View 1 (cartoon, rainbow, N blue to C red):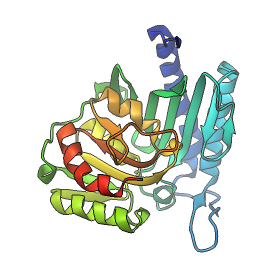
View 2: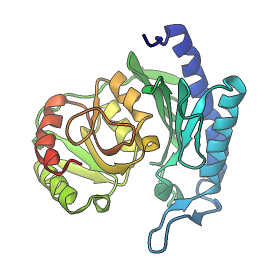
View 3: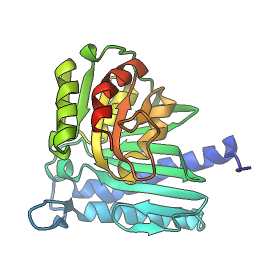
Length: 271
């Protein structure tokens, strides 16, 4: 039988998670809206930016965790895998939304998730320029901002026609996926683009209802899963199943009825 994660141990790890947001912010904020060492790491014809802030933030997160818990593992966008089969594994995207970061838009986030025995159990979506940490586990989620703490709770929105939805960019969808997005978009009340994981936080906050994404990596979504779960939301693939280790097609929703309406279109393009 698998071990359980005690409330006391979870509390210790949550305190570390808050500290990790603080140290990563110190590495990132001095490089926001100034020269940031931008490099294009993509193949020819595909812009894939990385900055010194991305690399520096992930490095300080890994360093602090390793000092406290040398047996913990890592899966990160910038520095890859290290002890990825450990009991505790931190899944890191130091700047989710690097394009927004280099454009000076404060909708990028720092995603820090923790797997316990292979399952996401703790996570945060941090936006340090706005002084926001959306922090969560299955037992509950909260927003830490400006010295205050408030519970996170998704809102009821059973009808897709009443929903505010989002995606990072419709260009991420292939042909069949794009058709599914257009079908959901045509039914929804309003759509917003370009917010990356900040949109996931807005579902947890109760201001957005549905986010549809594709081609995600584990570090793009795992930190958000506990935050949404603790706020009463859902994170599934396009079949309505739990998101797998490889991520891929993902839907984030506040209301299960709204999710089911969207899945009518999305299931036809599920991979």
